[in-house]
Length: 80
Image (cartoon, rainbow, N blue to C red; front, side, top):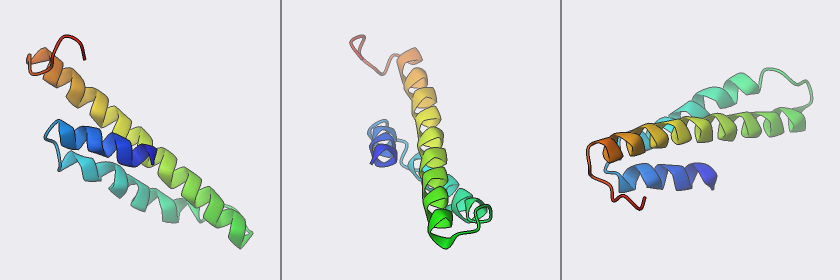
């Protein structure tokens, strides 16, 4: 849910192409995270946690960068 909210923030700033970056990061991280624990249920839990965390961090960083660019360019109100 957090990653979806952050991607919608990027869409609101007219950066729909950047909105998929976090999801792509999550798709890449998930199989990597599956390699570590031995138990199947734990593998899926760790994979899901790692993928959603990495995706949300990527989306948050991109949103912060794009928000700062919009403010610097004067395309955001001073209240935001």
